[in-house]
Structure formats: structure tokens, C-alpha cells
Amino acid sequence: MKKKNKRVIPGFGISMGVTLTMVSVIVLIPLATLVIYTAQMSFPEIIATITRGRVLSSFYVSFITAFAASAINAVMGLILAWVLVRYEFPGKRILDGMIELPFALPTAVAGISLTYLTTDSGWIGSFFAKFGIQIAYTRLGITFALIFVGIPFVVRSIQPVLEKLDPSYEEAASVLGASRTRIFWKVIFPEVLSSLCTGFGLAFGRCLGEYGSIVFIAGNKPYYTEITPLIIMSELQEFDYPSATAIALVMLIAAFLILFINNLIQARNTKILNGNR
Amino acid sequence: MKKKLLSLGLIAVLLTGCLTGCGSNKNSVRMINVSYDPTRELFESYNEIFAQHWKEQTGQDVEVIQSHGGSGKQALEVSNGLEADVVTLALEYDIDAIEKAGLIEDGWVDEYDDDSAPYTSTIVFLVRKGNPKNIHDWDDLVKDGVGVITPNPKTSGGARWNYLAAWGYAKERYNGDEAQMKEFIKKLYQNVLVLDSGARGATTSFVENNQGDVLIAWENEAYLSMLDCPDDYEIITPGISILAQPSVAVVDSVVDERGTRAVADEYLSYLYSDDAQRIAADNYFRPVNEEILQEYSDVFDLNMKLKTVHDFGGWDSVSAKHFANGGIFDEIYEK
Image (cartoon, rainbow over all chains, first blue to last red; front, side, top):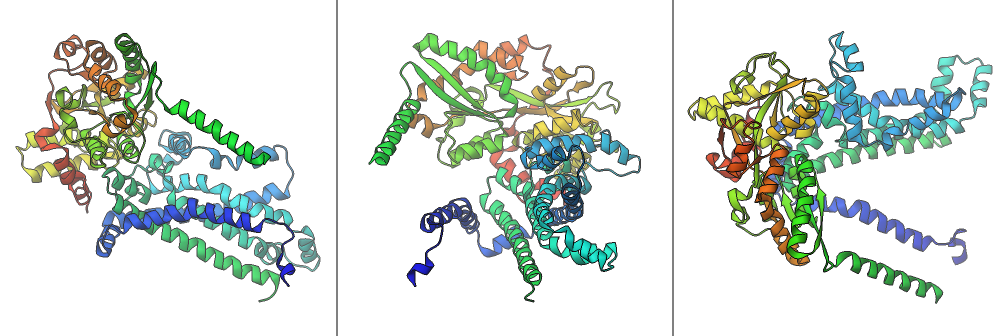
């Protein structure tokens, strides 16, 4: 019996050890510190801190912009990934590589250049200004920056799934007389849905915590474009660690919930796809 | 066996590397100066003359490593263990925070002359060429239709001087009537189009992105913007402003551990020498040496009425009253 448990590839013990150490050092211990710092405050104090008007409104701004940006990214990312996987055209490799630039670019640099583009006098901003739409220094500007930051997450999550998707399914559906919309919704979409959720969740989580690029484009006006990470920074400027970590903890819990729900949806989806509903 | 030898050898190499790297050599000494953003050029020049001065005095080479960033953030990093021999930050409050972390001894502010602030600055207005909105003093900033750019005093230590300068003006104007002073500050910040997180960000909004009609800025920063594009801007000096005192201090626990107290102390003392004072003035910081300040009277407007933070009860009380949660700066944004 014992022999059966032995894995083909040796080294389970050491790799598991490495995994646990990494997870503890990189994730668990820093998170525990957050909780410890917050615990310097009593529970009513924590509640009072995180329910201050400005903090609440910053939660609202952060969530609404992150959600809008991720939703737009989910749609646009799907189209982008589709084009990159299914079609051949000159410059495809370069385009494919460019998708990842937001990963590599320091976000502060992105923030400054996006702001420059979207103010009333910038290239993009001056176009929209004609219609009376202001992008920089509004919530729209924050969303704009977040779309930039989040797009690679969605594209890179969907791409491998689309690549594996066998076109013969679509052909079969087509031969059987399904319309194009029906093929998309009934054949392709269910296959990519799970990775689309992953991409959405990752982008959303990333957008919630984004600071570098937004502080430049947001204008940081209290109750209007003040994001939660900025509130955290101002608490730190006051050297008020407990308040800062209490607010950060709320963000963390929210992000965790979203990723968790995301995983649930995915698990359910995989089950359906595998046929044991 | 081979493996063991190899790893032992590796450890030996690492250890010697560390020892030679960390130990301060007799003939050369290395120190770290943690400073804030706008002093980059100032200390670049100063470190050269200081190295010369130290060499003449002791025969030792000195290498000064600079670190620049937002003042509050720099203070946090030093409190958290960044090994700075000296700190040269934007305001006393940030060095007080390092003191509270137990790294600097009480009374540092009296260690050197003039509240341990070897150079000062003040708050001025930068407006677009020709001054189209006719801005001459603080009163003009609260008029309807004037777009103001200033960083957020809650996230930027430097911006607290901007806020305090306005508060000082309001105090004079309304004879200390707090309700009216708050109303003035509220109107001023209602005119703020972009509340950047730091001074450099605000300058970018005003200069690169063409936002607003007036930038409330440190005098030295305003002059730097003027250097870059002298045809686009004008500096307006208000009648009343504040004496911004960027403080310096030796980080006691670090110099004691590294044995660098002598050089660190001399580094800060020598900032008061004539040569260093001129370097400060060349970088548009006001020298504290009166004679040298007079030499530069064509650069600096010496007729401004400058208040100090002590007129408002010092940083601790200012911070608690204005910038703490629920303080006046929060109040003016409540609906």
C-alpha cells in the first residue's frame, strides 16, 4: 500500500516545505502584521475609523471605478484575445507583446502620461472636451487609468483557453444549423466564461489597490475622486499606523471575498463543463 | 563532502565581502543623508565642497549617499530602519516622528543654530505669463473662477507650509476670528482644481498639464520652474507668507552604532559655513546667514512678512488642530 502513495516525481517533501515557507513569508506574515497593527485599536474605534464619511466615500469611489474598469476590460479583453488567437495579420507578435506593457511600466509613469493625454489640452482630452466631457481629474479619469492597468490580466487569462478551443465544435454547430450568435453564446462563451471570470477577478483585485497611476489622474478631491489607497497614505503621513491598517484591512477583506466568489463560480463552471452537474 | 566544502567556501566569501563592505575604513568614510525631493541639486553641490572640507580637516575621504523622496515617506523609512546618518527633511514634524521612534534624542532642534534649519524658504505664487487673472495676494485666490493648484497637506509634508501660509494670512486679515478664517480656507480649497499627493505632482499639473491659474509653491520650486521656461510664468510674492524651515538632524542611534558621529555632525555644522550658504542661495533656498541673504537681495523678496510655525504653537499643535482626523482640513470638506 505504502508504495502506491509514492509520487512519480520525487521531492514532494522539499517542494511542499518551500511552498509553505514562501506562502508564510510573502503572504501570511505580512497579512498577520496588518491584523496586529489594527488590533492596537479597540473594536468601536475601528468601526469609527472605517465609517468616517470620507473613508466611506473613498470605498465607494474605489469600488465603482474598479468595477467599471474591470467590466469594460472583460468585454474588450475578450475581443482582443479573440483577435490575437484566431486571426493572422502582420504585426501580430508585436501587438501581442504590447498587451503586457502595463505589467512592466511603472504605474507612476503610466499615470503621468495618461493624465497628460486626457487633460483638456491633451490629445485625447481635447477631443472629448468638445463634447463637454472631462476625463482627467474626474472618476472617468480614474476608470481610464484602471482600464490601462487591468487589461493584460483579462487578455492573458482568456488567451490560452481560446487557443485550446477546437474550431471543429463551431463547425459542427454551424453544420447543424446554429446561428452565429447561438454558436457564440452556446459553444464558445461557456468555454471561456471561467477564464473570463478569473481575468475579471484578478483585474478587479489589482484595480482596488492601485495607487501610483491614479493619484496623478484623479485630482484627489475629497468626496469625489479620493480613492482609498490615498486615504491610507494620508493616515501614514500622520504616522497613524492603526487607522491606516484598519482601512487597508477592509480593502483586503473585500478583495478576498471577490476572489473567493470568483473561485466558487469557476468551480461550479468547471463542474458543468465536465458534465457531472 | 564536496557540497559541504562548497557551501562553506561560499559562506566565507560572503562574510569577507560583508566585512569589507560594512566596516568603515580608516581612510574613507561613508554616510547616508536622507533628504526630501527639492534638495537634490542643493546636496549634489554641497557634498562636493563638504568632501573637500573634510579631507582638508582630517585627511579622510568621505562619500555621501543621497536619498530623496517625499518628506513624510522618508521619515517613515528612517523610523523603520533605513540607516541614515543624517536626515535633512521638509519640516520639524517629520523629524519629530523619527524622534518618537526612539532614534533621535530629544532636543535635536536646538542642536544647531536657527532651530536646526540652515536654509529656509517661503511660499509664493507661480502664475502664467502676464498674470491674466490679476493675482497679487492671498485674497485673489478665493475669487470665483480662479483655479488653484496646491498639493494635499494630508499626504505631503511640504504642502503643510502652503496651508499654514494661507492660514497665517487669514489670521492677520480677520484679526484671529476663527470662523472667518475657516471660511477663507474653505473658499481657497474649493478653488483647488487638483489636490496632488506631493509638491512635484502639483508642479506637473500646473506646468505640464496646464491646469489652473496659480500654483501655490515653495519659493525654490517656483524658481526651478522659472528656470525651465522663463517665458511662460511669473512669480508673485504675497505680502504675508510663512518662513518654511526644513530641519536637519543627526540620527543618534545610527551614528553611535556606525561610529560616524564626528563626520555627521560636521556635515550639518558645515551647512552654516559661508560657502554652503551660498550654495543654498544658488539653489534658491534662503540662507540663514543675514549677510549672505543680503547679497542675494535681487533674487529674494526680502520685504515679505514671514510668520513662523511657532506663531501657531509649533507643529504638534498645528498638526492636531488642522491635519488630524476631524481637524480643520477635514472640516472644510464636510458638506
